[in-house]
Amino acid sequence: MEESPSQQDHGTCFTEGDNGLSKISINLRPLNVSDIDAFMVWATDKEVARFCTWEPYTSKEDGINFIKDKVIPHPWFRAICINDTPIGAISVTANSGNDKCRGELGYVLGTKYWGKGIATEAVKMVSEIIFKEWPHLVRLEALVDVENIGSQRVLEKVGFLREGILRKYMLLKGRYRDMVMFMVAFPRSLKLVADLLAGWLGSRGEVCVSCLFERSGPFAVTTFA
Picture 1 (cartoon, rainbow, N blue to C red):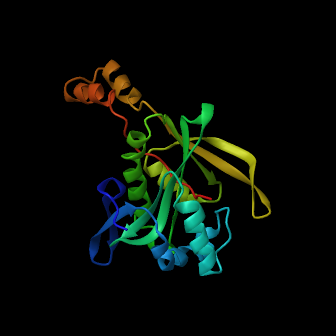
Picture 2: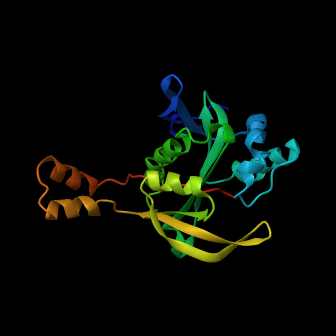
């Protein structure tokens, strides 16, 4: 099935190699059952699953059932792709009722692609999408294991606020884990307003006025269940 333009989002990141900087183009799109072989690459990896609530997959049938039963009905779940081949996934999980103003962002990425800026770029792409698609959302949060330093660094790179540590917050694979809470809330224009009050005028002031009417900005990531 071909995705509509609204379901396809593209971005670019750069990674440093022996021959200098290399350009990597990524796109986000829905994950389909036909992607099962690519899905199994990261879903069977113990390192990928280390901080996730799920154990590594051992059968393709289980992977297909997960895509059918969990991924396809999910309100916002995208594959992270290079050349349209999934190498990971990113999702935003909604809340309901009085909590519908909050959403939780999560991601996984194949180990081959760690440390290349791909997760950071994917999160930035989501940051330009989700608050526009979900206008009721005012807070995006992410829970990260205290030992998951890689995800914490991604969060910090994209400007997510570290609120604190929740002690013994989650039972994960037989152990009670401390989790770090990261979040971003809207409007994000407060810093620019502060700059104005401190005397920053001119074009910076025009940007501030524009930001008061926009819902866009960077967020954070963690692993999804």
